[in-house]
Length: 100
Image (cartoon, rainbow, N blue to C red; front, side, top):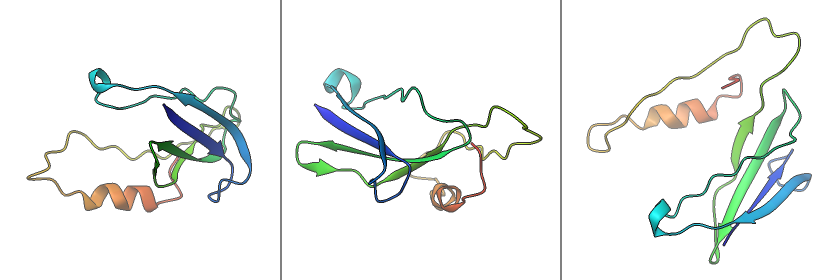
């Protein structure tokens, strides 16, 4: 079982959702959570835990639904570990001005 928590703060103290799901070798031990009911235009933080291990805190943002004049996107495509420039992912993640 994999547990997850979704909160409005990076310390995960203002929890808006929590739950659990399962994974297996057929899914490459990955999970997908559809966090329904979140507020539009809001930054959320999340974390997963399984078998005594805890992921780093992640950040996501829901899209606004009203008064949208523009949106800022970061787009990346396939990566090849042997030839990739993975610092780009870190730089994108560090930006707080992106909508998607």
